[in-house]
Image 1: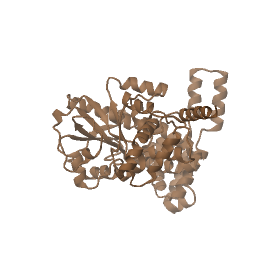
Image 2: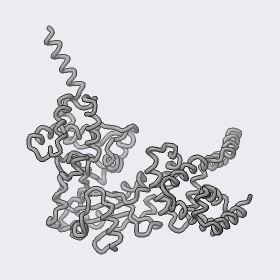
Image 3: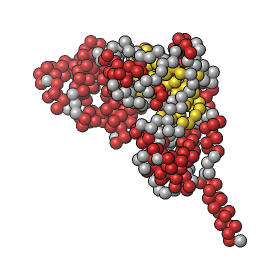
Image 4: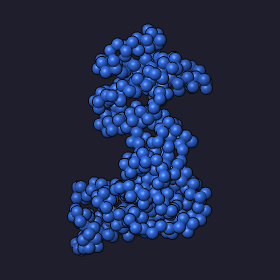
Length: 455
């Protein structure tokens, strides 16, 4: 059946039975196939809009079924791929390589491109990827669909397409509401709390917008202009903190970065945002000399719990494991004896966590560390009990760290991290490691003592 006949047939079905009945008959995958065969631009856009509306009306189970169908049935065409492979083997020219590349492209990617042409298509595809990411941990078979989304979104959300805008107290209320709702690091409790973060002369907030997502900030960063790099969050969020005159500030502190769209998670927006904001601040305030973060350590407690879970650790010494039992007290940070016992152990442990703990890809375990180190920042300082809010205590034992962005060293630091996997850190942070007794050293000391006792 020709593509035009398919379009007329399914267009008639939509009118005759209604969208819901067609969906109940499992027609959405067929409509997706029809979209790929449609040649007319106007009819294709209309059909794309119908498919996205239909997908949006599905329940969670039906959405999963559709995404699974895309994974199984919308990959490369096997026959075309086989022919292209044989053609390249017979005549490995540039033209044959191009044909092979085109044949190897999953049909899903062209489907997503055509869906994106519909009015509001970008917004709906971002939501579709959010559904996919939610299902992916329990459905590894969806990984090919995720790979296609990442491939396309990396281009569609390239920094060249993103618009940097300042958010202030005069920004339309519906955008400010989204900033309040999506603040992921330090919750905004009220409109007056938001005003304290946006209105004073020593505060800035910047967001990235995409031209196809009107009034939808993708990611935003909150900035404080200060005279020094802060070691705690409370003074920055204080209700009656005195505003610093911007012209006297020497330091720009990025104290909160929040992604508002789950569907673009993992796409490099934060790195682009910080670099653009640094450039913007340097133009506005030439007196700024230091660009630093005050960042959480959200994975520390989870890492410590894994290391403690079996009563022994290849990283933490036995004495450290014993001291860390104090963490089991909910109010340990308010009890002086527990603080005294834990401080040296936790300082050494957070250094171990940030400098040496790696995930399966050989990158730092901590997601915030990965972001800033990959951007070319330097791990500058570890701050003890810098945030004693319940979430910060539960996730990072109250620690916050400063990453410093030195414009003259950003490229060099990035290359050291990207090419050699080395964490660029200050001597003060590395000194915390040198103060540790590692398990191997402890075992060696115990063995030596045992030998002495048997003589």
